[in-house]
Amino acid sequence: MASPTHARSLWTWAPSGSVAGKGAGLDPEWVWDEEVDQLVAAVIQRGDVPKANETLRTWKRNDQPLPAGLPADLRDFMERARQLPSWADRGKLELAAAFNKSRGLYLNLLNGVGGGMLSTAIPREARAVYYSKGGADMEDRVAKTSMLGFAVGDLNAYRPDGDVIVQAVKTRLVHAAVRHLLPRSPGWEQTSGGQRIPISQQDMLVTWHSLPTYAMRKMLGWKVPITSAESVAYLHVWQVTAHLLGIRDEYIPATWDAANSQSDQVLDPVLAPTREGVELTDILLRQLAEQTSPGGIDRPLVNALARYLVGDQVADWDGIPREPFWERAIETAWPKLVAFREKLIPLPMVPPLAWTIDEAARKYILFYLTKGQGTHIEIPETNRPG
Image 1 (cartoon, rainbow, N blue to C red):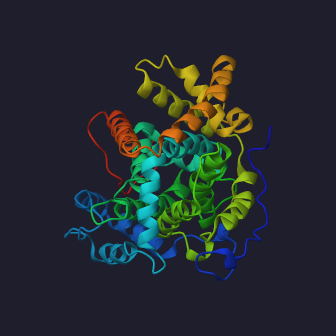
Image 2: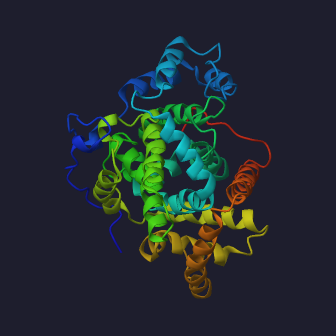
C-alpha cells in the first residue's frame, strides 16, 4: 500500500501546451487565486457572509444581472469573473451539449461515482472536504458538488438560461473561503501534508483531471464511438469551466494529449489512502445505495460498480469491500451494455429519450440528497464543527 504522503512529481509541464500557449511556467503548487482569496477573506472578516449568501440565492441564470445588495467589492469581482474567456467557442459549447445529451449515462456515472471515488483517494482533497464545513453534512456537500457537475453537462449549460457560470463563480468563492478558513482548523497542521494553504492551482488541476480527463479515458476504453469534433468539444466545455473556476489559462491543457500528459504528472502520483478518504467513501457509497434502493440493500452491487470504475488499487485505498459475484457480473455485462446502447444511439428518438431519463435521474439525486428542500452553493464562515 502506498504512503499517504506520496512525493509530488517535479513540475515540468510546459505552458506552451495550454490554452494560453504561454506562461511563466511557475509550479502551480505555489500558486493560488490571489485576488478572490484576499476579497473573500475580507468579506468573512467584515461579517458580510450571511448577507452575501442570502442575496446570491436569487442569482440563478447565466444571463441574470448580479443581484442588488451585494458588497461593492464582491460585486465588482463577480462581474469580471462571470465573463467567458476570449477563446471560448460557442459552436464547440453547443456541440458539447449535444454530446452530453447522447452520452449522459456514461458521463453521469463517471463524473459522479467514478470521480467521487477518485476524489476520496486524493489525500488533500479528501482532507479539505472532511475538515471544512461541508464535511459535517456530506449529503448536502455532495448535492452542492453535483449542482456544478450537472450544470456543466446540461443542454443549456452556457446558454443564457443555463446556470454553469453561476455555479462555477459561486464555487470559486467557496474555494477562496476554504483557503482562508481551513488553515485555522486545529487539526490542519497534522493533516495538511505540509501544505500552507489548501486548494492550490495544482490541487484544482488534480481535481479537474479526475473529471473530464478520467471520463474521456474510460469512454475510449469502453470503445464508445466519439468523433474528433465531439472529443474537442467535450474538452472545450471543461476548459471554459476551468477558467471560470479560477484556474489560470496557462495551466489549462489545450489538447487531450496535453491533458493526458499533465494528468500523468499531477493526478496519478498523488493517489493514496487516508483515514478521511475511507470514511468519506463509505458515506458516498451508502448514499448511492440508498438512492437506488431504500435501506441500502444493493450496497454490494454499488461496491462492485465503484471498483469497476476506478480499479482495484484505488478501490483498496478507498476501503471498498470486494464483491466477487457482482464484480464478475459487471465486468461481463457492462461492455455488452455499452455496445448495445451505442447501436441504438443513431435512432431518431433515442437521444431525446436518453436525455429525459438521465435528467430525471439527476433531479431525483438532488431531491434525495437535499431531502426535497433544495440547496445552494454558499460561502462558508466556519470549518467543520468539532
